[in-house]
Length: 281
Image (cartoon, rainbow, N blue to C red; front, top):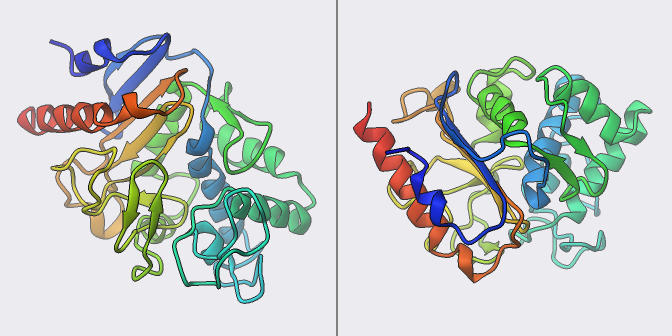
């Protein structure tokens, strides 16, 4: 029985998915070359580009950016206080985990301004081309405007396990809680105390309800999108190397908008896959 057989019952018109151990694709289903809208899974790709800009000395994580008192770090961690679509602050900096696509647009504009390279081109040249992500494009908001395929995102997930483009120390920081005391909302999943987030990567922690499986490591990182998409990964760099299933990742892309059909379907699916992976170790 396929590791991904639970996806056969998802109520969607088109679906593709894959599971990797960080080096090898363990299972896949659907047309992995089909292009899907990523929605907020875009934020993982944009975060990678911003972190690359940090490593290249364009700015530092603690460089002021956005509203007064905000930094690059605040924007990546949804702690700047700007709203979902409006770059104007709705909360004080560092007061609440306020989920924001506008914050990523501010970051993209800053990269473009400081480098002289438009952010979609910066991402393409720095991230997509080196990883062979030929079907991936950002042609809208840096928070939710990319398209990609399962094949491309699997390459990205394997980069997260064995980074070539960023230093392992940079990813270790990206996967670690930023402003860990902050409470906030996970869209579609309610208010959490605390609501842990890294640098662009949501951290599963013990959030309930949640889209990842309840027995998956609390350090699991990733993102889902309102277009019916998600990517999760168990970190493998630095202090995370000894986690069970370190380096394992899953990508699932659909063309049905996130609604009640998702819950608890994604949670059950991810829990099943995780348990099967552990049994196979």
